[in-house]
Image (cartoon, rainbow, N blue to C red):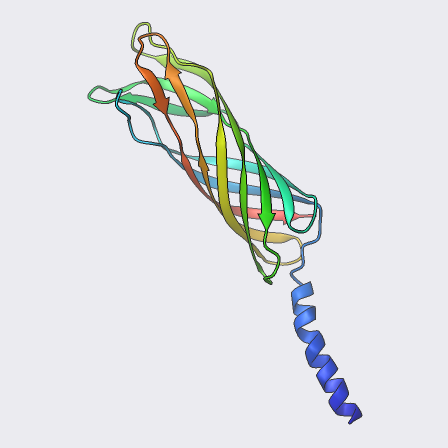
Length: 195
């Protein structure tokens, strides 16, 4: 009887021990991702901004095991500006920091999905357009949505897959061509470290 109880206790503890091996309890998490930026195609005015793959750094702080805030950063990214029927008419740099509030689902072992919502601010700089008189508005504010997951490798390291939708636009101000909707979908893969 004693051996049976010890065996049952050991079996009960085994899943718990396995789950603890992938418990990531730190308040902070840093992730590095490679992100494909898929921008909206040209609108009625024919203006569009090129797609690009960029590096991304984000820093998360966990208020609770389920609730976290994530700040997403990169350095200014250069994009080509196209006019339908003409082709490339210049370049622009954009810096798009984004702040998200996330909900993390914790009822899994290694697989740790999350959803997020927040706000994006984009600053446009180094505008070089080949069309005389053309210019663009330099600031954009818009909502951002996110879905992704971490896959725990151990107590600190994880693999990450993340998809974001950001509402981003600018406006051509010199020739009256109107709004340029960029509205990118960002698909990223990377690694994270929680501490």
